[in-house]
Length: 343
Image (cartoon, rainbow, N blue to C red):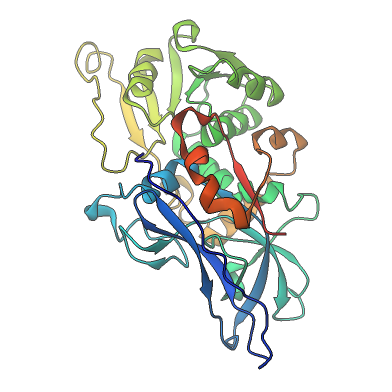
């Protein structure tokens, strides 16, 4: 991405002497390479909503780096709107979709509960009651920030189909790639290998009970190959690892970047299938029985595994977030899930 000058504006948000309601503060991407914190007046809470005080959040490095650098193509402006997003693409925009907090005001059954919301990065906010999904008691609030990633992963596993798969390769061992490999191994007897150019990702694979290989040593003739590296080179690797009539499941989103796809050679004669997966719709195989809410609840439940903590980076304080964003988004940072702490 283009690196400009990132800064944040610290604004007072405490209740003043007049007794006015405390506003929230939110992260806004204001132009390519620049972000700031802004006050967000809340006013009186509306019926049917809950007021949530954020505890933890997470940066979606892939999508948010594209948003932060203004690389959302105009054709996708509407489809890329996140729940509770404010502003409009390209800028200024309040964007994000992973916040875990505590319900301060709302119905008795939710008051005091720890909930996950698909809300941008903000200290205090109101959402409809149905949008505040309780975090299971056996899932720490800090790990629940992976909820959106796990939901994407669950949808991808559904898109992959029931198999059976003897050998699976996942190219790109970022958060979504690692979680996809983890779920595929949990749901099947397949041998799953994470493939990445960074040898340090071998530690992640080992922690999750998966094999690891650099591209040159990755297993060939895989019945399913998942691509999640967001690079043309990674997609070429994925195609090369596939067996005859195999499925290559594409999870990467490239924004407005044109990516070469090697569809010459033996692509057609081997009858390969290149299939897109995206969380914006429930996978067709589950669409009749599963709602968005049910899918998210299932994803949160799947986070009850201590091994997944390997994906969480040391937290960044919300106040410091704008100044830290260049390093978080840097391609060579090696950061997996960047957690945000609000207190």
